[in-house]
Length: 427
Image (cartoon, rainbow, N blue to C red):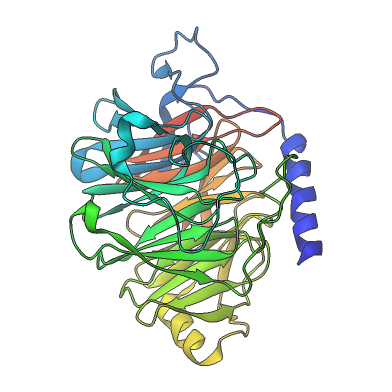
């Protein structure tokens, strides 16, 4: 696994300097022009050109390393998480005006948001007066209770430079767009998912090979409670030096990432990005069953739509697909072996977030090649591509398929600070 992790790190360094940075012109269209799906760069919120006079190109100082985006169709708005800005920016989905900026800053004025400080038997190591005084760096999010709540994970608390201590997740009331509660988590949570039956939240901790389960069976956010923190194979020790910076994108064990519940809410699937396979969790018994392998390595994102489980394979640049029921049936009797009934298509190196609204087309953010690829699900063929600002990472699609919204976070070499809204038309 150390060899693979080193290979991944070398790969990330290589691609960050192998592709020229791109800034796409407004009105850019996808190719080929006669495709069954067409995309146009319709709107953009960016923080790199304050003097832009181009229609639709909006300078917004709050777009600071945007990591992910979530569309709430029922309330006609979308949420962009600015990781380095420690903010969530809310926009109207109809007129694309900024509605609000939610600040992830906690001090003596809002300690009522915390019902607890400790997370199971984890320990804080930083020498601070109050562990609940910090700014949170928002990473990913998910909705629960039919969009009533938005859950946002924090990469780390700002005083924890190596993301080695308990972090947190906040709960936003989407009627008021205000944080109503903050709950502690294990180190470095990234992906988060809500079960289809709205009874459980799963928080995947990139930091130490664990997955936290939260009981959300009621509707009152103050009553939500942690159930269990599951270890996937072996928990990573948080024995990093407190006096030196540690690259936690490399020192992350399995680097657990993609997370999805099966439609019947009976199982939770978690991708091991730095090792091999998908961890399978039984949500009824709340136990880790084991890992199914057989897909390509370096899984980044998992999505279930209709009959199919889709994976994005970051390093090799693929989208893979299998029947999710067949996958689960296999896992129930053949855990810790290789499942091989995959269909796949190459979309370009650095495949990150994938999204679909109805399962007919899969949209993929291709980070290293600064583009969006559209895959026709029926035969797993790429039918359209469009350029994106460097380097696209997060994505969501509106329920009607009319808009695809993409975040470009950037890398150490530049790029990023962009949120692109693509309009989509279909033949």
